[in-house]
Image 1 (cartoon, rainbow, N blue to C red):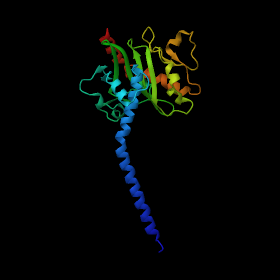
Image 2 (cartoon, rainbow, N blue to C red):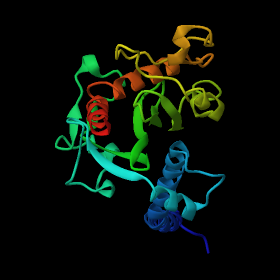
Image 3 (spheres, rainbow, N blue to C red):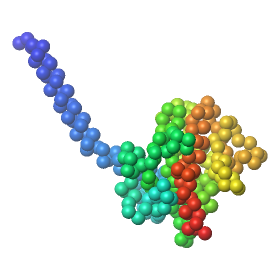
Image 4 (cartoon, rainbow, N blue to C red):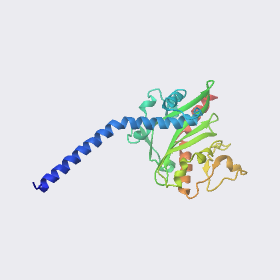
Length: 258
């Protein structure tokens, strides 16, 4: 029997509807699994920066290592630890959409080009014998094409970089995306953020760093062909360790650890 165009269209619409329902159900079912995988992957970076990863750890090992960290919520406006919020209650990415949970950054100070930042952030402290040995801080900012997300660990002096990683970005393949290259990230270890006068000096250099230069203590090699991304990294680090980022926190931590 010859099928009418209306019948064929009805079948197509029915198939499309069923497929869309199945896709929606799959997305809902898989979303918690995806979120958990993202959380574990982020913790994997944190544990590595904390110096707690002895070889490759499975998910259970990562979770156990995180338990050894002091996880705190900091009020970025004041630099004080929050006693009202638990770490699981803080989502800095979502908070920027809520004026009550975020702060507008004056354009002259918005070096990271993020517009707003959450009022609260989750940070990670490593202690040895009760003394602070390392602090791990989330950082982010606008690159050439995308928002760059990373973590930076400072030694107990709150100036020397212990380790750094960028784990999420969408920069130019083979150029700006090299900020995820472990070899380049390793260059950050031992570099310092501030000079002896307290002035911010860290920089992704325009080219290779001359190790004989006094400036080498504050610089990492530039990314060939990705000057804009390199400059963006310098700018976002400057922002996060300034008055609208972790500046107040570092002052409070220094006072507590004296």
